[in-house]
Image (cartoon, rainbow, N blue to C red; front, side, top):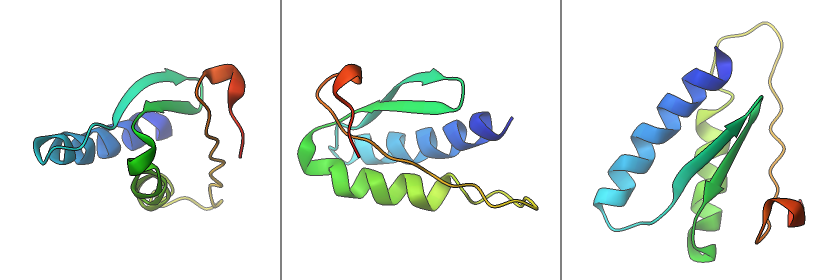
Amino acid sequence: DIIKIAMNRIDAELLARRAAGQRARMVLQVHDELIFELPRAELDEMRALAARLMPTLDLEVPLEIEMKVGATWGDLEK
């Protein structure tokens, strides 16, 4: 359920940003990972968005986020 909540929060934000002309979009969810497609110019904003919205659940144990970037899924790097 944690990933579903994060997906809903991020998707709502991305919809508003796309209405303003940005192109970032969530394209895939695999287990506890979210994959996004976006222009490199929007990368810093997307990192900030994920960092702000993903760990905001009230849990006893803090969630850590690992972010990677790559042209393909196989090329992902920190």
